Length: 171
Image 1: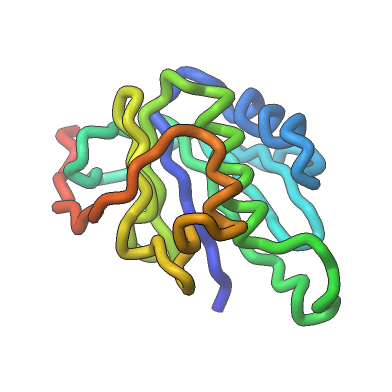
Image 2: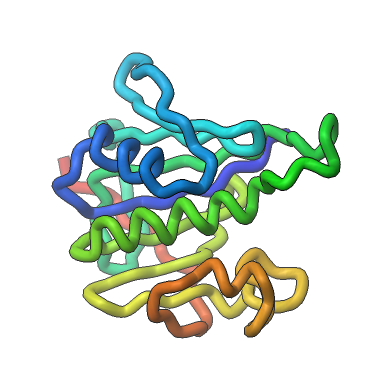
């Protein structure tokens, strides 16, 4: 079973602009050729897909963000073959998410983790909230003062997030 986390954004930026922001962020990502309706970047540890066609969605979560793009961060399990490699999926995911939030400060966003509806992040307006449920010594965001948390170099608060109700999208 693969592990992936998805960042959903409400932004007029194209998938190419999102891809390019990740490639320019100096966190180890190289741009990939487009495939069908997706763009992306990758590293030895992380595969990133950027999608700008959300027309097949039949619903949305009730948190106030209506996404127009999503960015999926997938674990390539580099640690299985190269346990001493300095590239790490979680670190690159956090760095990639922060790079996108920094590059597109007008974009509202939310993030779901582990291929499920587990809220990790919500940004509305200028307020960025990291999920309290995943902020601790063993959590996705790490504990306050940890190396993981230091990767979040934009202003944020830590509060409980979700669960969010699923609302149908009117056709």
